[in-house]
Length: 243
Image (cartoon, rainbow, N blue to C red; front, side, top):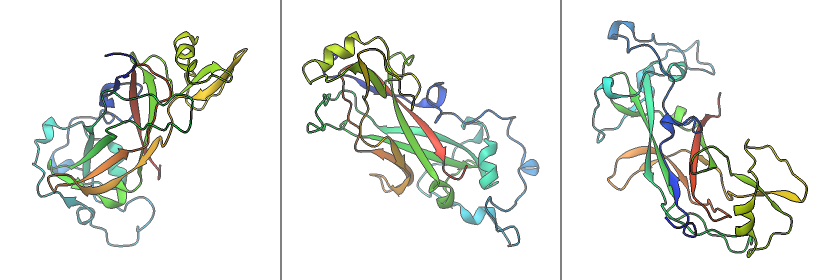
């Protein structure tokens, strides 16, 4: 791919150390039905109330039931919310392959198109794909930008001060390094820190129907411009706002 129409490669982060939104933490083999987690109150109260964990789940009728042995390993973090939840996985529904850089001008805003769309699939112990509204509404996915080999984070980069749109591409090619830890802002002599990934980094969950009428939990990024030309990967981190 040419660098001008820079390839924006996004991949499932399940097996990528830079993309913590991937495969759940490995756990022992799936317990038998007699050894599944006991029912209990969810985090945040209701301890004194009758509680039916299954009643909080909506089985998606049009989603095929899967063999639990083919699913990701059980994730104990899910059981802390609802013991009927077994595991989850992410799917990339849509991603851009090429996009136009927006340069240094804030007036030339060019979000990645088509926008990134991720889907979270949640499973119970029987292999049913389910929706847990209370749990899913707590989730946010955060995006960061990396180089093609995923050795350098480029969400922010160091550039000469007052770089204009004609010089910014050359400056990007000659820069010594990017800021490799998100949120860390450092400068070198004659250099300033600039955002390379613009727009809205975080996406909240949306429980909606897809083009086939199947309900699911989606994360959409309609406003993610990239300032500099190059070849990149977007990585994603799944966050639970309730801890």
